[in-house]
Image 1 (cartoon, helix red, strand yellow):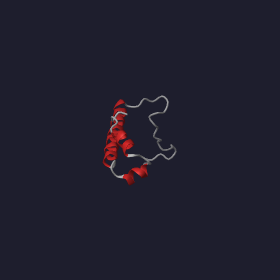
Image 2 (image 1 turned 90 degrees about the horizontal axis):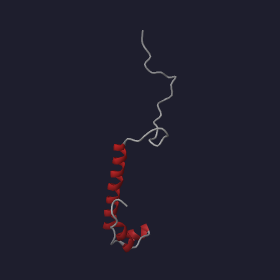
Image 3 (image 1 turned 60 degrees about the vertical axis):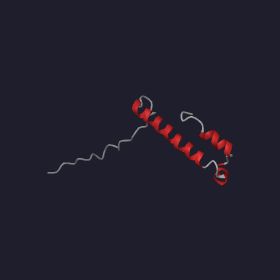
Image 4 (image 1 turned 30 degrees about the vertical axis):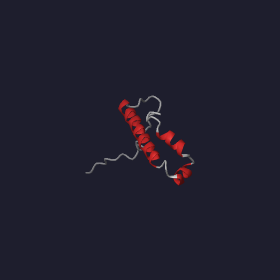
Length: 78
């Protein structure tokens, strides 16, 4: 005789978001998310600084050279 291991009567497990009421987000995950966001900002600002002399790329972004450099020089936490 064989056993049925999959129970088809129960719905699939639905993953809940960390912001659902009654659930606390793991502090390590929060810290990791913040670190990744800061890291991404740092890379984006370095890329922006690298294209600051290319008038055509800046025009595509709608920025002047001064605005691009101002954004690139901002601290990573802003």
